[in-house]
Amino acid sequence: MKITKYRKVMKFTYMKWNLLILFVCLLFIQGYVKLESTGDNLFHIFINGVQVGSVASPQEAEEMLWDARKQIAAQETDLVLMDVEMTYVGEEIMYGYADDPQEVYDNIYQALLSGVQETRVRSYTLKMDQYMVNLASVQEMEQLLQAVVSKYDSEDKFGVEIVQDENRLFNVLTANAVDRQAQPKEQEQQLYPEGGIQAELTELFAQELEKEEKDFGDYELGIMSMRFAEKVEIVEAYLPQSQLRPLEKAIEELTMEQETVGTYEVQSGDTLSGIALKVDIPMEDIVAMNDSLETINTTIRVGQQLIITVPEPEVTVERVEVNYYEEVYDAPVEYIDNDNWFTTQTKELQAPHAGFRKIVAQESYENETLVDREILKEEVVQQAVARIVERGTKVPPTYIKPISGGRASSGFGRRTAPTKGASTYHKGQDWATPVGTTVVASCGGRVSRAGWGSGYGNVIYIDHEDGKQTRYAHLSKILVKTGDYVKQGQKIALSGNTGITSGPHLHFEILVNGKQVNPMNYIK
Image (cartoon, rainbow, N blue to C red; front, side, top):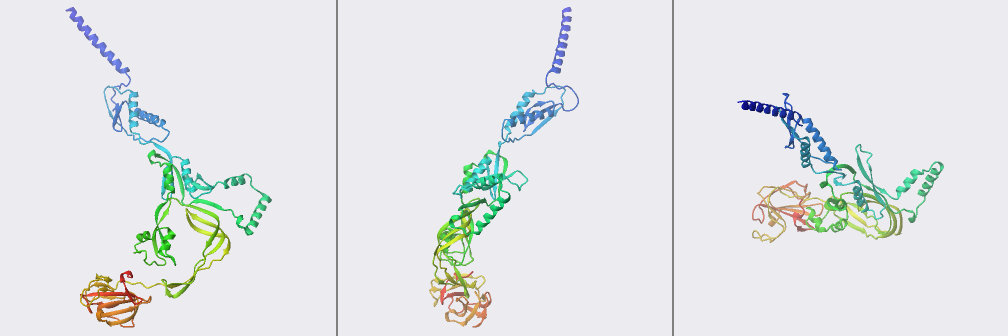
């Protein structure tokens, strides 16, 4: 009985000590959350949806997150962007454990690394009109623009200077082409400026030199100035490495000529073959680009706009050169206007003869294109003889379809006779149309005949100012008489089925020098 009694006492005492030791351990273990009824006291932290641990307060997790971001950023020299979304779920517990802070920090660090986007590197963006490119450094920008300048600078005289754009409030750079040879002189003048009487004497001497007539050897030849036609803007940016362009590729893009659409206005005396030589495009290609040209023999008119493709680079470099030439030259064509002729009529009154001269010329270029030329000095060895051309000033008349609608039933040229007595070579254009359809004058002119015309049936002839004649046949009713002057589009008759026909239609002809031609080549 005694042994059993002591055993119970000892068992109870053992249990009390165990509970006491456990309670003390809980009080001193790191991360233990005290029992307080104050709301959520344990927080489960998530980074981008992934749980990284549990802490006693959100502020503790925020500090860990900030420290982890700083550690990652410190390891990179460039801009690092990362997707970071920290969320947490809180709960109130009677007692429990927060995770080891170092373990939570390590988990946050690894979660941030997995969310790091592509590293953004420091770079520079060049914008010139519609062209834009990203390069790794200002030095590469300078090399790119130098390649553009060097393409037109055979003397290697000009360099590229990248400077702050004074007209912009923000940190924007711009670039200029500068004369390397002139820079030391300008710097010397700034260091040792002339003053007083010396400056006045230098100015007077310069003025006297300008008054004297220069000899050919007195002119400074070569490129005088260069500049970019487009506004150059360079800005610093942080971009993914994948968006940077290799320097060699950028140079190729900026210096290579691209095909762009342009126009050419036909001048007096132009021919299609001459235009092809002038713009360096085959005639067949010009015809293919222009719907108004059917073949290489199609007539072109002064003022007509022709579509052409022009090879041009992305960037335009303007430069001024002074050059010496010994050249064969032509005198400008001299024109004598004739108000009684149409603009399509010309006559050469004097044949030209080329001359020979020595000149110094100031020339302005846009890339390879000469846009202006001023002769500074000229010595004519043999005088050129001008070509003298008499030309018309009147705009030639136009021709329109004489009816509205109608079905084209028989065209100009050889055919099988549609009915007995009809010709096997059709000399006009037929449109099938009901009897009574309005017929109008294709062009203004004088009615030279109006009446019956054998196979034509009722027919009208109209003579026009340009020497052409139009005929309208198989009419049911004639509304004009011989001698009348009619305007283009004026109602002159009603269509019909008179004469030799196979059905109601209008037969229409155009005659040039008394001979029928295809009307469709003249109708607008």
